[in-house]
Length: 173
Image (tube, rainbow, N blue to C red; front, side, top):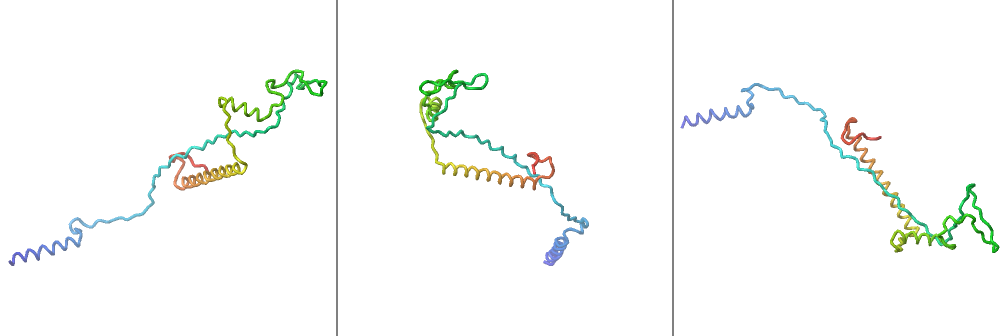
């Protein structure tokens, strides 16, 4: 019994001494260096989005006004014509558009062009002046938003890119 107690009282302090000292008595004391310096973080930047390619629609303004069908010009650039007995004028070299009827209007011309393009069908899309102004306002808002988003992207790229050899190209300032 005394031997058991002796072993317990001998081993227990040895374990406590080794635990508290951290085994420093076995391998010697090692010096720990603590330093702080900024770490360069490589950020992969996405490529800039491609530019928006907006197409311009063709707008037609159609009226019932008569289309002038002028006479053909001669070599001097004049349009020779002769006055008839009834007071009307007759082109000496003919009309520029001989297939147009005499009372041909812009509406007639537009309808003929639409019929050619749509296999004889006539389709209209109409918009009021107020709605057109609203559409123009919306387009300006879209352009403003895109510009502001581009400014934010450029800002973050200039803040995070170090040097000119960054992924995604150079940043324009």
